[in-house]
Length: 264
Ligand SMILES: C[S@@+](CC[C@H](N)C(=O)[O-])C[C@H]1O[C@@H](n2cnc3c(N)ncnc32)[C@H](O)[C@@H]1O
Image 1 (tube, rainbow, N blue to C red):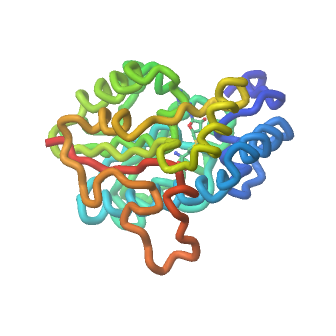
Image 2: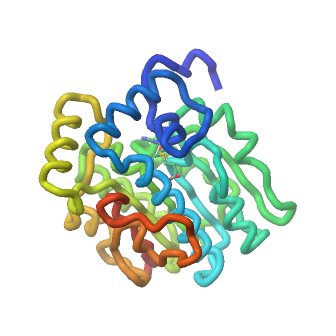
């Protein structure tokens, strides 16, 4: 990583999300942006936690019930508790995980992401979701003749161009064999009251937000031709909720769609 790429004066999604999750890897600009967005959407912190909990439950499903051993996690985020490789390797120690993020700060923490069981493997790539060919060219530890879970959790909503985002996901999935999975979450204003929705739209128009929410019909487009796993497309907090969890956010609080689907 080149340290001069790390502009701490500009808010970045990874650090803002880390702030919402209660982490320490963030700067004043990230906290300011996080507080501003939380004014438009007061449940932002609960939504961040609900999303992270979905990541854990869905990776647990993929490594367990679905028997997946290879994971491509794009939009990794800063390491926190229960990163993808930790959840997957707890279930299946031979799991291989490739992490991809475009924030140099995530790269600075890559060592924490690169711990692995002796049987498994982890890699970290500093690449951009907008350049899927570059990602596909660098997947050296994954065997693309065997199923892979493509994980796009709380990342594709940073791409403003919806048709292009669907195309990018399609390109990545096209490179994966039958039996692979798509696991995705994405911000939506569908569950919100008209007042909260108007706040969010205002934040987006004024340039204070870089999150581009999708309507249900748009989210569904990512899953065309795939077999949705029960319970289908729901708020992340409603995807196989853990009854023993401390928090049970409502769909309005979570305000992200989540789904897991199998490539036939
Ligand atoms: C909200 S965090 C989500 C982290 C993790 N997936 C989770 O759900 O806990 C979004 C992550 O996506 C990364 N990101 C945003 N745009 C990206 C892009 N175009 N390519 C790769 N990563 C991106 C950010 O740097 C950040 O780490």
